Structures are given as structure tokens and as C-alpha cells.
Length: 330
Image (cartoon, rainbow, N blue to C red; front, side, top):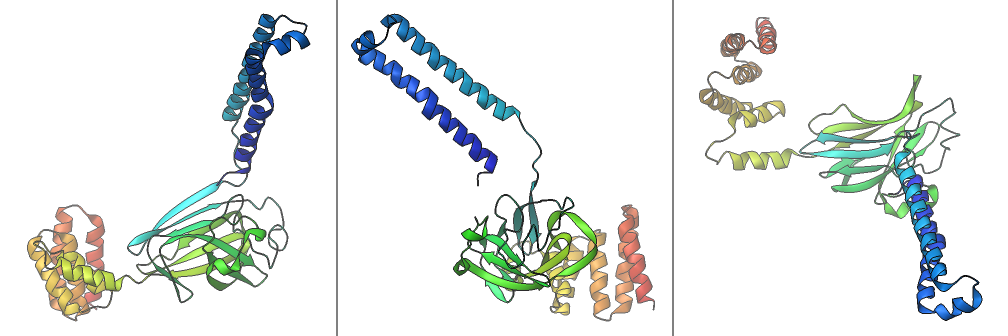
């Protein structure tokens, strides 16, 4: 979408072409097509008149180039700079593009941003959110795609809107029948002020995250979820039929997502056989054994992992195994 400065620049160039250069070109064309008319109506001889017309065209073209160069050289910081965020989420990502105005000593909500009216949730251009995969917001499934992120702020609650309109920059442009989902979010007040308008992703987990909107002393949160379990389980089933099954990754998914721990243990066993010196595999194998209540076997796997990690000079895994051994010793 064009910014206001780009629109003004395009309009200025259009005016120069329409009202300066084009009339001069027409005049020069007329001198060549209808020279008799100019011989009668103009005191200058025709050759001098043609030369004069050419000079005027050349001067106008040079002036237009100077204006263009001046536009290109003059660059100042944007009052509300644009930010684009791309957050990995689930098996895909979420991308957000918005502008970041500042408080600058003003009263924001109830003044700069009126209560009860649709807000583009930023400045300058529309705020756009793009989901790489289907997500669930407020109990409604939102298909993958590009959407407008709009809000209606109020004193105690905000209405957060995901709209099919990705170009809303003023309340007059908004069409409610283009809403995909509306969610009401409570306003959280803060003692400290957020100077630059901020939208960010937080509390990111495999299947859930939060979109946090903060400015001045107000913050609202939009929970987002995605259902990836069915797809991953189908992928695991297919991958296990391959020549080199991903035993470790499959075992980790089973262990971390409440699946069959005995199946996870069987895959950890195969992963350890395939990579006997992989201290990270031994450590997670120990974790799985511990979850199954097999403490002695878990201690043995943790000690092996610690020994391998020490040889590899990986202090992080040495500490992780020390922590696990301490828990198993209780």
C-alpha cells in the first residue's frame, strides 16, 4: 500500500508531466505540422521559434529530473516506523506487519485512539496478520491466509477483530460483514508505560501462543491455538515405514505430548543403538525411563550420558544429567 509521501510524489510527477512537459511537446509538434499558423501569429522566425520550443522542453525535462533526484535524496526517519515479525508456530509460522507510533506525552486511549471506534491497530497503513496454517481463535477455526487485524478499544475491554479486509486504514473503510472472528479481551493496566506501540508473540508453546498488544499503560492479549497432533501422528506413522525411521524425534514427541511412554521407550532404545555416543539421546532415554518409574535403569542411562557429555566437553548436558541424577536419588 502506498504511503502518503509516495502518493504526493506520484501526484507531483503527474502534474509536471501533464501541465508542463506535455503542453510543450504538443507545441513543438504543432510547429512542425502547422508551421504556417505560427508564421502568421508569432513575430519570431519559424526556425528560431522551433529552437526556442526545444529549449523549453529540455529545460522542463531537466527541472523534472532535479525534482526527482531531490525526492530520492531526501530521507527522514518515519514518525511511526513499520515492523514486521515472523514467528514460527506449530508446523508453520505467523507473520505480522504493523506501524509503531509513540506516546510522545499524549493521552492515548480515549483521545488519540477514541473509545468505541474501529482502530487500524497502529498507524499509517493497515495492520496485517498472516497465518501459515489453520489456527483457532476464540473457539473459531481461522484458515491459513492474510487478514486485517483491527480493534475497538474501550476502557475495560477491547474487541479484537480478524477481518478479511487487509486494507482498513480508517473506520469508514471497515465492513463488519467481512469479520472472520471477534474476540473480547480484558484490558490489563500497567504502572509503567510502553512508549512505542508494540505487538508481540509471547508464551509460545508447540500448540498455543499469545498475541500481546501494548501501548501506554494498557495491554490486551489474544490467545491463538493450532491443532498439529493429527498431522504429526500421521507423519510419524508414515516415517516409521522408511528405511531410516526417525526414532529419536518420534520418541521425543510421544514423551513430551502424553503419548504411549512404552512406545517412546522402544524408540529411544533403537535411537541409542543407532547412536551409542549421542549423549543427548542417552539423556532423554533416561528421562523416559524415569517417567516410567524405572529408576535404576534411568540412573544408568543418565550416568552414561554424563560420561559422554564430559568427554564432548558439553557442560550443559553434564548439568542436566546431574540434576536428573539428584531427582532420581530422592
